[in-house]
Image (cartoon, rainbow, N blue to C red):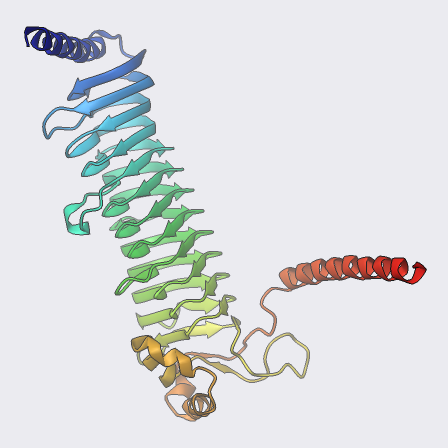
Amino acid sequence: MRKIILTLMFWLTLSLSASANLQQQIDEAEPGATIEVTGEHSGNFLITKPLTLIGKDATLRATGMKPALTIDNTQDVIIDNFKVIANQRGIVVKDVDNARIVNIAASDMLIGIQLHRSKNIELAYNSIEGTDAHYAKKGNGLALFQSEDLHVHHNQITKVQDGIYIEEIQGIHVHDNTVTNSRYGTHFMYSDAGLVENNTYERNVTGLMVMMVDGFTARYNTSRYHNEMNGSGVLFYDVKNATLAHNTISENRLGLVLQKCDTVRIEDNEFLVNQTALEATRVDDVSLVMNNTFIGNILTARSDKEGVTLYANYYDDYNGIDADGDRYGDTPYTAYSSFGQWMVRQPAYQYFVASPSVELLTVLDQQTPVAQHMLVDDKPQMIKNEAHMMGINYAQALLGGLLLMSTLIVWRKGSKR
């Protein structure tokens, strides 16, 4: 028994010594110095000077409810390659100018990295995993507040409340991140001049949530598999002067939701196999949905009052013809469908899609005065993407040629016998 107690005391002493040594190294280091850290260190470490910490198979474990690491009121700090374990917050950055926090692995905590009143910050190549608890009991993977000029990229985030939460940020570039199994993938609040591109959002409640923003661009993102109640691939609420372009929005309950939006351009996106591809409420007549592709959606669009402006989009359920050969349909496309709206509310109705009665109902819908003034595209595309179609034709031609040659070879061998 005595030997066991002595052994425990020995390891405890080593642990306390290691923790004290790390904070001591931080305190005694000259500004701008680099410290290489190995092993596990328990405590609540504080940096208040320009410094670089490089982890070599290193772990920072928080003591109690305070952060494992706090960077406060300084500049030029780099934190690279640490595993972080904490009960509440992993790393907190406050009033810092110019910092890089990269290659951090954080799990089973409330908030991974939290940022306040800072600028010129890079958060990259971090891996953050929350818990299986309800969203109300979770924190955010990256929680960013009242800061400017942020670069957030190549992070992997899962099982949190919001993957990347952005509030009162001026100038942020969010790209090449993946957020899954969370409430919102990326959540903007009161943050102007944001750029979001090349991100992947999967199996969250909503992939990209943008609220109360003036000036915003989202492009080349993929948002799919958001099918919970009120789930959506992308949602804009009270957004002005925004562009959503070249995104793939697929297999969501709602693809894109626009609520109370002004001067928004939705162009060159793919809406694929959503229950409802586009839902618009209180959208101004300057906003435009143009040159998008709608394929396999149960309902293309629904809206209030006069609807949203549709122009030159491709719809796989358009039945018109192109007699003059200009690659646009000669008759307008009407997205209004009473059966489609019923089907969204009662998914079992989809078994009746393309039945004679539904086809007749759709024709009758499009003759009503309501349908003639809302959700109408006067210039629907006949071919969704000429280059893509040509590429498919070349591939098919090559495959067909190979099959033909194989058939001839087999036939010749058979004839010689």
